[in-house]
Image (cartoon, rainbow over the protein chains, first blue to last red):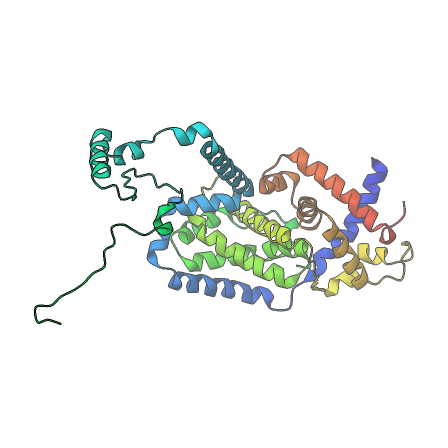
Length: 161
Length: 205
């Protein structure tokens, strides 16, 4: 240990060289002025409202003071995102009726009655669907055949033309 | 900076006045903050410079550290001294900067002052007892800075704060927010590393 301490003593003497490194002459006379100028410019430019949410400032300042906070915050965000993805991909999660769909779906009895009446009275091939869930199945009849409801229009004006 | 600036007690410049200055600066008094900047600019700049080995980077980072400290003054609770708190901001800013520029190290070294040529320790180092006896002080300076840059940031920081700035283990532990044992072990490891890099320029035992 003593030998290494002796070696370190030599190293410490060499490291003392760094104390002799000096910035350009007059540097320390100008530095405070530059800092103050930047502070004044920053204060003039900054809108008053920016200083208001102090909790937000504290939040970000905590990140600067302890960079470990940034990592833990990022990790928790990633975990949250991962959890969200896994939860969304669960099959039972998609099948469960949500409160939203329950509220937006009209009462079954009314819809069924309406659609039954409409479809029986007009067998046109057009599908009437009141289900709010949009179906991605292709409707083959739309372009494959003539629409039986389309009638040629003939206009006759009272004047004869 | 010729004298080891941080060899003096960091708490030495009238702590009572410092508290008053901090209070005034916290209320937005730029004059008070200007006084605080003048007190600590040399030590803050020196620490950043010795970490980066680049004057321009040190200048930018020193300015940003002081500006950041002013903006964050309202969060300064006074649990530690203003000096330690300011140091912590500068050190964190510097380490973040060094991590970002990881693979592009460009040295822009300051000149050596006149006293360097008359420092007996340095004169001894470039005398006939070192293997590289022809090395001048400028070459020594370049090799030393290059060796420092090979250390990891925490190890370099400990060497800078202790062996260059002259801070105690306790002060370093407070600045780096770790325990004293960690500071000691990092210092030992860093010195070993440096010794290996600079063996040609050190006196043989």
